[in-house]
Amino acid sequence: MKKYAAILADFEQKRAAGELRPGQKLPSVRQAADMYGCSISTVTRAYAELEKRHAIYSIPQSGYYIVEDEEQEAGLDDGVIDFASSSPDLNVFPYRDFQHCLNKAIDTYKYHLFTYGDPKGLSALRETLVKHLADDQVFAKTQQIAVTPGIQQALHTLAKMPFPNGRSVILVEQPSYNLYLKFLEAENVPVKSIARTAESIDLQRLEELFRDGDIKCFYTMSRHHNPLGTSYGVREKKTIARLAAKYDVYVLEDDYMGDLGDRRGFEPIFAYDQSRHVVYLKSFSKIIFPGLRIGAVVLPEPLLDRFHTYNQQGGAALLSQAALDIYIKNGMYERHREKIYRQYEARVETLHDAVKMYNDAGLLEVADVRSGIYTQFKVPQAVNLERVVDQLKRRGVLVNSGKLFYLSTYLQREKFLRISISRARPEQIHEGVKAVIEEVKRGMNA
Image 1 (cartoon, one colour):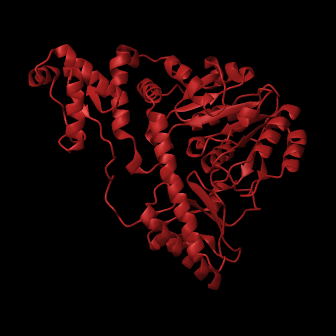
Image 2 (image 1 turned 180 degrees about the vertical axis):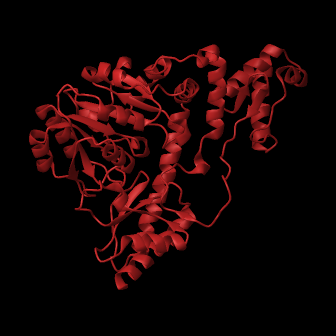
Image 3 (image 1 turned 60 degrees about the vertical axis):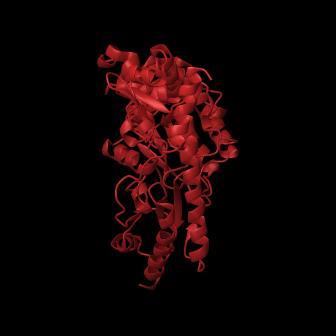
């Protein structure tokens, strides 16, 4: 066996035997050459291959370290069942992977990371995103993509900038993303509403609003809606794209959780847009970690100049962009997406099993959501929702009231709890669902 292959084989054998621990430092290149009785170049080649396989990572001026295969449990078990948080599970953060990419980014880009950079985003990342987005049937040119420090900044810019149709009103679904609704109210942006339920949306009413409502743009989450958890079917997505073209209304498609679903037959509205009326927004925080603060916006060409003119808050940190570029190129993002998708899918299935077991009286109406992290637990109108939330909190079960996800002036609200499984450990889900149903039952009798 050649020395190069012998080094690789020895590494795999030691890792399988537990002799190499995650985070452990490997012998230096010179030390390894002495150990294996070979040249420095042979060891360098072997280490490069292991790094390519993502078995090790390097830190400049420090050395080579073992990549952590399985994330360790983060934090202590405080007994709380968290059905409220929308942040990713701490225990599935790709910490070692991304640390590796940060190190490579520093080594690759060096002094360029300390400049202001292109406000549109790192060119290498934007080029990588062209291929990455194409997997979701979002076909765009590099110049159409802007990288922002999170999607909220992009949404704020789009809300304030003028659109070619000359209109002023933003149409929002009710319920919808609470932080965006609060922003629109705080900024006194003209807003109109359309009801969306777990079943669908009234497409006839949507057409009426597009036609007569002075609608500048329509904000929607076509996949894994927050807070409902549901997604539009092909008919709804095609119709929205057609109506946008017919009435010259732009669609702001917030696809922040599109990666948490099965991609087969699950295209966004953008895939059906033939008139350049859909603005596609993608976040990376729900897959990797919130602190990354990177979002991507795909803009129709008529909006490009105005968006960059009004987007004066600066771009995402260059180091984060460079690391994300490497993370995607090396296949780590897709691997992590598949891992987290499968884990969340299993938790959603456990949630439905628990509902089937404990909801025998039919007190809850539960949306048939099979992926993503959210679902809706509708409760009877007689129930005091806020009291249920408070009582559950006392029992160590955190949930969010659906009231949070409506405009303050919108009164035709459904009464529901938004349930998130991203931070709920699988072994907690049955206990949590049982507690929810018990408190709803008490609320009926109060």
